[in-house]
Image (tube, rainbow, N blue to C red; front, side):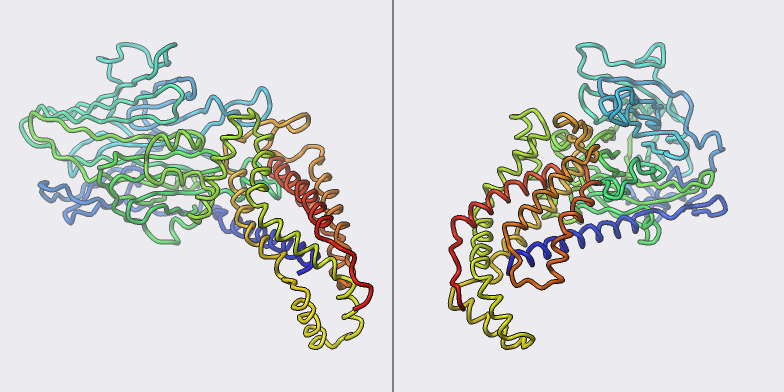
Length: 581
């Protein structure tokens, strides 16, 4: 296969990939909901799940009945007032070195990521992941439910524990301290108390949420803990044609030991049917580009994952929920229910440090596990290079150099095949002139030539096809890695995740593609293919003008090294072709 066809195949593969991603992006866009439209909740107040009923299945959320707990009739929850729907009162402010949060006993209402500015501007405010803004509503909620009896929910019940926090509603991580504890308590009837603590740690985006149920009464107490994330789909920050954010997954995700990693886009929450998935451990989350929020139950906790929707002021709110299997607390005893709340960026190292199976899939390198694993390995190499070089831009250059070295045998075979094909281009042109439109005879003569000269016509194509998975994995890895967000390279490139402001890299790419074409004369090539090839550098240049600079840097480095390698291989293997066929 000659160089021209090789370029065309690669170009069409790229175009097909981009079209496929664009189609998926259009499919992922949630349908707008007007004020006249209403998504009916599964219970009168879908923000508070119903307790499991007599059959052992939750009214919403679906949870197994606790062994030893008698079947009870499901309670009917009263719908909250409009004021209550915005969240309970008694909120406190918490500030660590990485988070600034507003929370109360039942919910984390707001969370700013102090080390991540919203934009690359110097005075940019931090990213607000959890928010009370109706247009960007996103909160983490947790509480308890009982059959026909009061229990503290995320709407009401928990109050700041003044015995542990005597005064004030502000908590700040002290200098030199490694953790900060914010205590809440609920005192119920019959001697029942639930002590809740939120524990924040220095440099970490995980909040430990611990509930201790203490039964000082004379009768057993049964309750079911639930944890959920509620949000309104966010508007994309960038609408550029090739913005990675447009292709990044936006929606709910969960992981169970049985079915592994699964996810659902917002517009499929209802269309794909209800979710009622039993799980031991696992996690639930809402994912977006570079950031996510997730509830991580204790590894041995049994519960059920479910999805829900509700309509508040004309906006659809999506809910992903974990309903615990419940606890049975005998008089004079206590029980503990624990979970972790992730609120922050998709930092690979911190995610792996949690030692939670499947949580690394929250970094959505690919929907396909093998591609995600390949992208994860490439990121590990990139991160190792960053530790040596201290700059993400030069780390990308170093990654390309390493990949070129690893793939040298494939590239050598590819360029060697191209060189041999180039050597016999004049002879192939003579065969085309001799047989004209008789394609059958031309094909037979070409095959005879290939056989006689020991030419593999697909020798230059197969190595390229084998490299395509690496390119796609690199694309997703560079697009999804929050570590590269707003990272500078040199001079005019001060944000590797934004497009080149002066289009220098796309222009360099055009020059490299043009020079590569000149190494391969188009003798005997179909005129239509020649015209397509002449426009190909410009097409790629325009396309790359909208790509993030980090991706274009990878491509330019790869093209530059490829040009040098191809020139050397052609010089090494090419010989003057015979004058006559």
